[in-house]
Length: 401
Image (cartoon, rainbow, N blue to C red; front, side, top):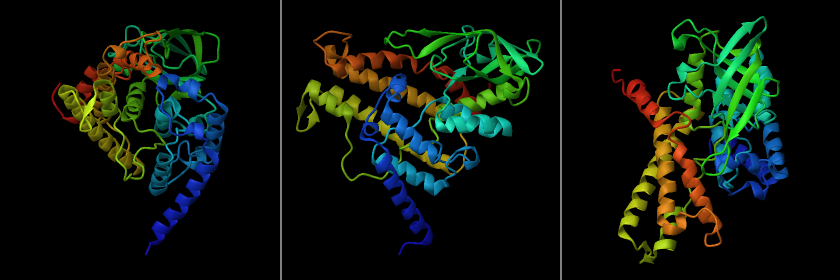
């Protein structure tokens, strides 16, 4: 017999299932896209209706407190929602730095006023965010940043430059690390501020990448304004807040996830194996080329191990645990796996995996080339591999400096 908790969970599951069937259009199911294309994917009527329906229930951020617009779901309810989203292969109704980065940071460090003003608009998707961290002379050594913010009464006046500001051309707000005291050790004179991107004094210049897209931007500040009430944490103590935000980013665990869904009885599709068989041939339902077969097997095993580990951490996250320094392991391993996957996809295609344009290449072959070029940067942005290994060695393994 089902226990009271199980019965309650099953009732909630049926409610979720009925809601998703009614509100998640077919165009928002069973599709994949690169994050660089997210702006176009979400700029449709179906996407907006899907977002509005989920946001109305707070399910864009299911476990966030209901007083700020979140779903207020407990662990079991959150898991049921994740499973049902996975069952229909639903596209997340909302993505971005608001949910994955600044939202969790404000819930931990923000004042009540900041939470009330900013969190509901993140949950609803009304406001999009970008990150102001890296500068031309402060990338891996982020604490060397020089963008100045001078406090004048009830606001900061900001001058300087940020670079690699993903999605700045679409963002409404930015969270930024700025130097508020140049006369102390570099880690001690940094503050964490929020600023409106729709103001004079901010100039945005998209950077075209080798892949042909422009997801990153240069952002220039000329007497831009951030309100004193949008200082997060203490003045000159922003380094602590900034590091915490990066842990949320590197955890790869967003507020709503469709991973870890119901177990399937059917054999999962192996895209790499199918690709290899198509381009290299097969014998006895195996990839003909022995070397390619070994590479596909090894990468598939590594990817599966990574996925299972991520699912375990998602469960811990649903239990209320917050990400720590171990998130650098996810960033390091995940970035390497992403590069390996795209490089292997191009290699398996042979000369067909090196096309840029022309009728001799299919759409998927041309996309593979661009994806391969795009992923060359994943071991740099969000924290380089070298930075992640330093964090792992010091904060996870406890090795000496």
